[in-house]
Length: 224
Image 1 (tube, one colour):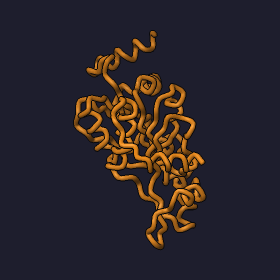
Image 2 (cartoon, one colour; image 1 turned 180 degrees about the vertical axis):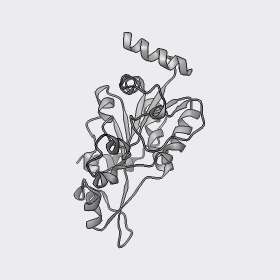
Image 3 (cartoon, helix red, strand yellow; image 1 turned 90 degrees about the vertical axis):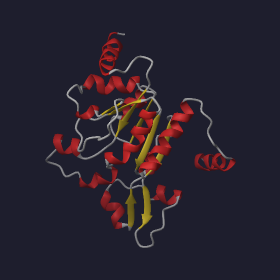
């Protein structure tokens, strides 16, 4: 209770009240590893990085729908440049702290992430997770309340996208491995990210979802 009071006081000072809903945004880039482990090369992990600018549309739409959005992170490469009073580039603010890193996620309705370390905090607090720009797809957290949308994989020679079975068969953990097998990687569009986020928002707020019989059949195939 003492910690909750401390966290709520912080939010109150920003103008965010107990009845307000918030969403945490976690976008992975290479800044943290470069700062804390500078002697090691992290280029092999670059396939997991995202551009924070691709998330601006999602944060703005969430804010316009009444949500507070906190962009998380201890060290980040680029600022989140969106001018809205309910969008907080928390990672770049002087009040950022290890306590708030954990507490804000515990207070959130759900998190939008790119599959990185802070996701574990969301899982520990049983918070729903929208995982976008995920790779490899085999790392999907299917035991949790997750909507997962991977980056686009395509055959560099033909330009054709990989199908689901090919995604799973080509589950590599280095950028060079994808390149060696002639596979290109393309990030989701801002619109893709927004669609995934608001599918979760609809599920959590009991808004009507347009789920077709084809969607249900594809779910059954996935689990099989």
